[in-house]
Structures are given as C-alpha cells and as structure tokens.
Length: 245
Image 1 (cartoon, rainbow, N blue to C red):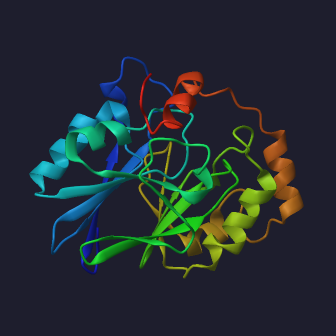
Image 2: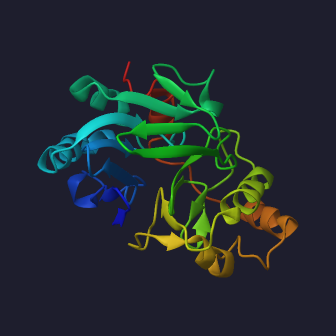
Image 3: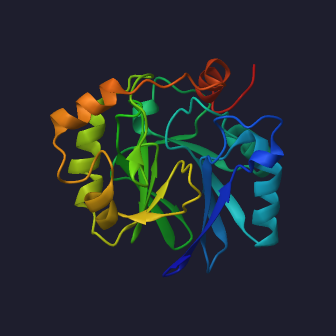
C-alpha cells in the first residue's frame, strides 16, 4: 500500500516455515520504503525470517537503514542484530527501553522522527502491554505493535504490563489520530492485515468508546493466558537486540 512517497510491505511469519505451530505465528513485520530513494526500515523483524526479509528488500531494490522494534518481545527473538550484521542497518528501540536494552544504536523519544529519504517515522510512546512499547506513525498510518490489535489489544500481565496504562495509551494517544488512520498491528490471529482508528473506536471488543477504564481493567485482569512458549529465551535475547549469548 502506498502513502504519498512511501510504500509498505507486510511480511508475516508463515507457520509452515517453523517446526512447530507456536505463538510466533502471525507475528507481523513491516518493511517501509521511501519510493524515490529506495531507503527503507523494517519494523519488528523476526530472526527466523531474516533471510526471507533481506531477499524481499533486495528484490525491491531497497537499502535497509534501520531495524526498528516496537517493544521487547516475549514470543519471538528479534532479527535486528542479524540484520545489522548483514546490512549495517542501525537498531532502533523506543526511548522507554533505555536502561533495559543493550546493543541499540538509537532510542527514539516520543515525537522524534526517524528519517529515511523523504519519509519519516515518528515515535509515539504507548506503554501498557510492556513499559517500553512504542508505536510509530506515518502520515495516514500507525504501526501499533502489541498495544492495539484489530478488534483487540495485547496482554498486560507481564514485563511491567498495565491495563490502566494501556487504556490511556489507546484512548489518549492512538484514538486521537484521525479516524481514517490505518492501523498495522504486531499480531493478528485471524489473517487480517489492517484496520483504522475509526473502526477500532467503534468495534474493538475491549477498547471501543462505549467501554470505560474500570470495565477494561476488569476484563484484562480476568484474562488467564499461558506464558509465551519462547518467553524465557526471547526476553533476554531481545534485551540484547536479538543477540544470542
């Protein structure tokens, strides 16, 4: 999909590429490119898919400048460090991961822009799924990581998660964007690619505008979900930008 001088390629973790169908399935990675210069970034790369994703960038004639993370993931290991080794791309985390993550080239503070060619991504702190969650905005689009899903949201029960903070991040930040802003989430388990801010205000099962904070917090506190299968490996690795030590 194109936005002015920018285009977006969505790349998913294909469960057929893994030995087991696990909770990495439907993890979303996004390649965003400036069409004039061919300079690009990748958001939330998965280490298992680095070869595929670099092949895509090569086929499209793109130069990868940045590997950007929305948060310290618990369900997969980021491909950021491997991509840096292969391409020289700089690793970028949101500023709230500073002091928690190492091996990062740049921590992007809220309101700061990451430029590549004539295109830029602007950081928006959206804590709640974890303390360091950051969304990234283009004019007309936002990459929400695990803060806001299509008709849902990320869990809030580990890594400093907070239902109260997540509610405020969505209502006071993401939902203030124009209604036609396209949402690209970090996951979707029903094969959907995108939504809009307006749709989620109306139809999101837990965060639509008819639901208040107390109800949302109660709903999230009632949820009982298993730990991500890769959590004990993924979190330490992702605190080192995907380096396996």
